[in-house]
Each structure stands twice: as C-alpha cells, then as structure tokens.
Image (cartoon, rainbow, N blue to C red; front, side):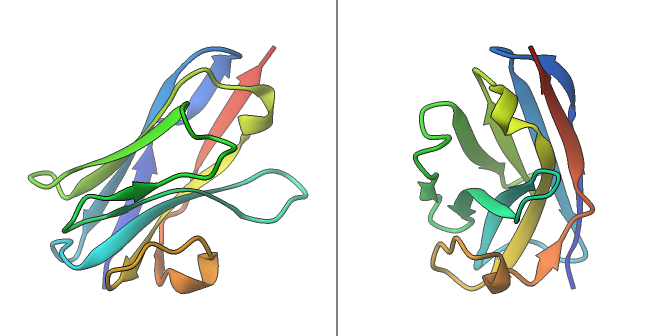
Length: 124
C-alpha cells in the first residue's frame, strides 16, 4: 500500500509559478511510475506528467511541455511538479498517483494509488 499526500496548491496569477509536492508513505518507492493528473470542474481527469522512479525518465503532454517539470527526491520519497507560466486553463484539482511497474502511462486507469488532490486556481 502507498499513501500519497499532495500539497503546494493555491491561488496564483496568470504567468506565475507553483510547485506541487507529492509525499509517499507506506513503502519506499522503487519500481514505480509516479504521475500527475488534473481535473477541472465538469471535465474528465487529464494526464499532466509522469516520471519513472528508477530510471528518472519523464513525459509531459504538449499542453504543458516547456512549462511544467516533474522531478523526484529519492531521499524524501517524494515527487514534485514545478509549474511555470501558469494559464487560466491550468485551474484544476491536481492529483498524484502511483503505478507499480515501469513504463510511463497516461491513462488514469493504469495507476493504483491516488492522493486526495490539491486545488490550483489561476486568476487573470
């Protein structure tokens, strides 16, 4: 079992930055993929970024590429999402999730453990 707690969300003006944190407990992350997803009101959950814990390779969709960066801290058993140049359309609840096994995936159905989410609101 893995428990995930996100933090770092808040209200920010368009063009600003936020760093989200995802702290994992229950076991040490190893052969896992950690993903970030977001869900805006009335919309489906959307993939934002993923990182392979052991290899460290990452993937982001074009919608956030160049603005969002995912990285990990092995010592803290945590993953972060650095979000720069935020846009109004980035407003959503952001979730981190863990998928056991290697192989980056963009479907939420491939992730077994989820945090409770943290709200990010971008204002004009």
